[in-house]
Image 1 (cartoon, one colour):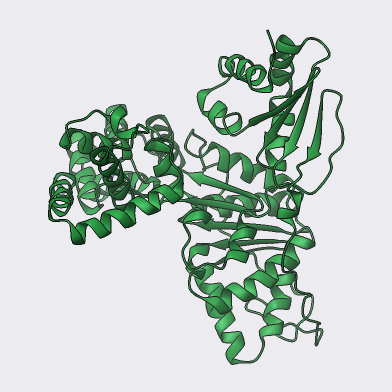
Image 2 (cartoon, rainbow, N blue to C red):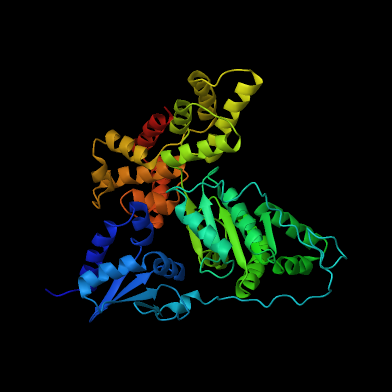
Amino acid sequence: MNLTAESVWDNCLDFIKDNIQPQAYKTWFEPIKSIKLTDNALSIQVPSKFFYEWLEEHYVKLLKVALRRELGENAKLIYIIKMENTYGNKQPFTEKIPSSNRANLQPQELDVPVKKKSPELKNPFIIPGIRNIKIESQLNPNYNFDNFLEGDSNRLARSAGMAVANKPGGTSFNPLLIFGGVGLGKTHLAHAIGVEIKDKHPDKTVLYISAEKFTQQYIESVKKNTRNDFIHFYQLIDVLIIDDVQFFSGKSGTQDVFFHIFNHLHQNGKQVILTSDKAPVDMQDIEQRLLSRFKWGLSAELQNPDYETRISILNNKLYRDGVEMPEEIIEYVAQNIKTNVRELEGAVISLIAQSSFNKKEVTLDLAKQIVEKFVKNTKREVSIDYIQKVISDYFQMDVETLQSKTRKRHIVQARQLAMFFAKKYTKASLASIGSQIGKRDHATVLHACKTVDNLGETDKQFKKYIEDLTKKFAQ
C-alpha cells in the first residue's frame, strides 16, 4: 500500500482524536494540513508560529506516538509555518521551516518614529514637566485570572492571555486580539492579563485604555498641536491594552496614528492587546494595512459559556460574596440566562439584594421573577442551529439538505436566508456563521446577505419568505 502524506496524517488524526478532548482537537488539530511525505518525514502546515509553539509544548508526545505508529521509530515531523519569516531551532523529533510565501508577512509600510523634540512629554496620564513619574496602568485589580473561570467557550483566549502575561512581547501572539459578543468577558480578560503582567513583571509599563478615550486624546493633541508628544507617550509603553478597537472604524486620523504607534511597539518587542466585538475579517471601515497587523498575532474568540461554565461562574460569584444559595436556584438561573456572563452575575446580585433588603428568603419563585426581568429586558438570543431548523421546517426540507453543496435554487435561497437571519439575530462572526451553515467561508455569507436584501426588494414571493420567517423568530 502506497503511503501518502494525507493518509498518514488522517490515521494520526484518528489516533489523536481518541486521546484528547473534542474541543482541544478542534482548536489545535483541525486547522493543520498535511503537505508532503518524504521517506519517514511528514511535513504539515500550521497556521502560525503560535500553533507550532503550542503543539511542541503540549502535544509533542502524542504526535510522536501517533506518527511512530504510522512511520516507525525513525519518524520525523516537519512543521511548515504559514506566513512566517523566521527559522526556528531544529528539535530531535520535529523541525520548523518557513513557507515559501513568507514575504506575505513583511510589513509594507514602516514609518520611522517622529524624532523627540523635548525631554518632557505632554501626555494624558503624567503631569507635564515632571520627568520619570510612574505611569498609572488604569487597570482594575478586581478583574483578574482568579475570577475569570475557564470553560470550553474561552479556553483558547484564556490560555493565550496567560502565555502573554508570562512572557509579554515574547510570544507569537502579538498582537493578541480578543473578540466576542457583549458581556462575555473581553474587558475582564484584557484587565486580567495586564494585572498578571504587573504582578510578574513589575518593571513593565502597562497601560489600559478604551479606543474611545484614545481617539479623544488624539483629537485633543491635534487641536493643541502636540501630536508628536502623543505618539512619544504611547511609544514608551511596554504593554498597551486597547479596549473596543472596533471604535476606530471610519476614523482615519486615529487609525493612522495608531498604525505608527503599533509598528514602533511591535518592532521593539512590546506587547499589544486588543479587544473587539468583531473578528478582524468582519470589521468595517478599518484600513487594510491596520487589519493586516491585527492578523499578525492571534485572534481568539470568547463564545457563549456552556451550562457547566455558567454554574461555575455563579458558584464563584456567591463564594466571593460569602453567600449561600440553594442548588436548584443556581441551576435555574444557569439554565435560563445563557448568552451573557454580565447578566448571569447581575441576576445573582439582584437575588442577593432582594433577599437582604426586603428580608425575603431566596426561593425559586423569587428567582423566576428576577430571571424573567433579565430575559425580558434582553433581546432574545436565537442560535444558528435554531435558525437552520426553523428555515428547514418552513421550506419542508431537513437541515442536512439546507447545508448540502447542492445548487438547486430553492435550497440555495433557504441557505442564504439562514445566513441572513444568523447575521441579524446572533453575534456570531461571518466566518463562524459560514462554518456552521454548510462549512462556507465568510465571503459566501456576505454575498448571501446582500442577495437576500436585493431579492427582498425586487421579488414579492421572496419578500413574503422574509416577513414570514421574521414573525417566526419574533415569537
